[in-house]
Length: 358
Image (cartoon, rainbow, N blue to C red; front, side):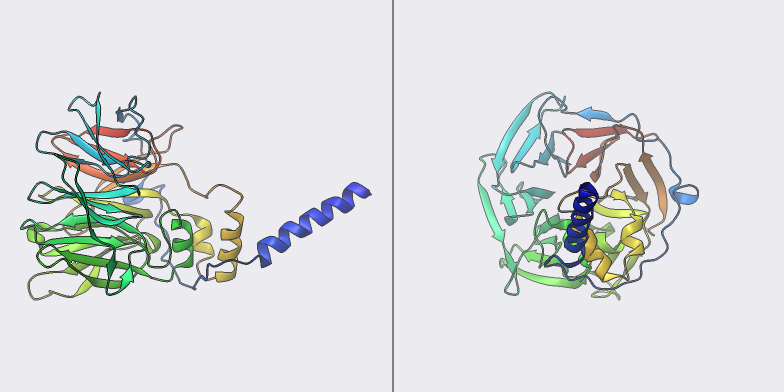
């Protein structure tokens, strides 16, 4: 009888916590589109990423979130401990170029040879890869501090850096809160190298994440992780200044996006859509319960390697997956380098590589 009494009290305490404990998250109701199937159709499950080559697996590459190559075909990435590193061509040796003191995420080259870094903690940075000189370009826009600088792309003439601020309210490491709250406080920003000014191009984005300029820089794409879509802002032509949707109702949470310079965008899918997030989308109270529970249990994330290739009209032309045990996930970046795809991950201990078939 005493044990039953204790059990009842314990359950009551847990329920009271889940239902009434203070939380700063204030979710809003929304209606997501019905998730596309992974059993058939254009997102049908497959094992095309099952045999990825692990690059730098003996070099302690903890959390190589993004990936980019230099003119000598050496791979650069940013790590969880704040380091920006460069791998030798054979992937066997590692050189530390700098430590941002934050969390380097998105990477892009400036035409003058500097590496532009979207650092989730420190803001938008520029690194001289030859001497390690690190410069803070901007930490705010329109008087509002950057909350979670996420990804960046740079115009070919070197004047503009287009970058994302995932959330003005939540910071690096608080992505679950931002996605669950769904308040649309992400921004697409532009930094002008000529006058050092930063301004917002798009507001109201749902966890603004990956950024990529399109062909001829006619437009810039930004992934909205919290809404399973890719938004587009036109920069040139009759549509300049207009926003539209490049691709909607994705099968998972979109992360970084890159352009191969010709005919394809590569999109990293962090994880497939979660049924609880969708079912509770119009139930803010239940999302509060979920966020309280996540303080004590692991994030509800399916470990599936997933990346998509999209043509210039947003159509799926490549569907790459692997759901087997020990797969390389979560994938946060896919970049076409030479005749291979290179993959980065927020939590894996290596990069990964897949040869492209002709």
